[in-house]
Length: 346
Image 1 (cartoon, one colour):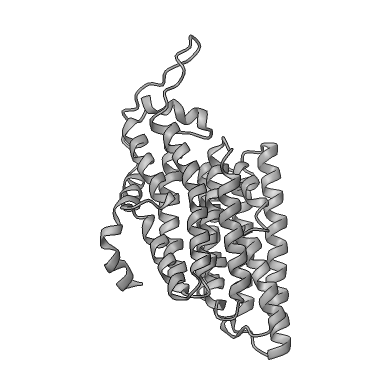
Image 2 (cartoon, helix red, strand yellow; image 1 turned 180 degrees about the horizontal axis):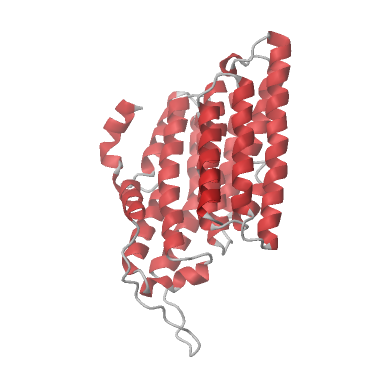
């Protein structure tokens, strides 16, 4: 793909996201939601591989259905209340339809089936965009409409997402699918808190984006698409593999790393809101995710490849690591001590 086309698609993604997050009108927000999938579809299908074409088709169908539901929800609300303002969503049917539509766009359980397959059919960089940037507009709409949505529905979807995201990631061997189920599990943490503390859900999303970007870019640097490939990369980039181990543990939410901050704050807020049972369940379900993060980390740094005659050792890579990877991994590991400053800003 030539640079001009890439620039056009990047600008379109930026434009679609900016339109959605900066508008209070449903029609403009819907327009932004429509621009985003149209910009990323060529990036998903650019390899012309049958799996990439299948991923692009699935992504298009799901996003088109979700966008139609968003439009239907806003029209129903406007019909009953005369309001096109996003924050004035008050009709119960509209609230329910919007919850379903945004769950489809985000990949929350039970509308998660498309996400692992689409991520598996995309490259790592496109997978990074799908896991982070493409989820920003729906999360923003959830943030704006959170007072109108039913906490019980969001909590049910959140606990199911944390459970299925952890459970289905256990036996995966493809790194992109593991990160897809990781994304579903993290979305559960955002959905459970958004009705009680929307700002905390956004903070969780920002830190999740930071850590996921670090993992995706690290895996892209060492070209690791499968766990078996990850086992042989320690000879090529030992320092990057060691940092990848810590970044994965941060994504799992282990202290004293950055990923512990959102989980700690969410459990604290849920306990304050007297839903300690939900906090306990989702905290226990995060152990499932911890298992497959540890499995990834184990494959990356501890496991040695079999020394058979047909095994080819990779040459040590003397090329310097991307500055972006260095910055993101440092932030993914070391933001917990400055959490009071982060909370003051948020």
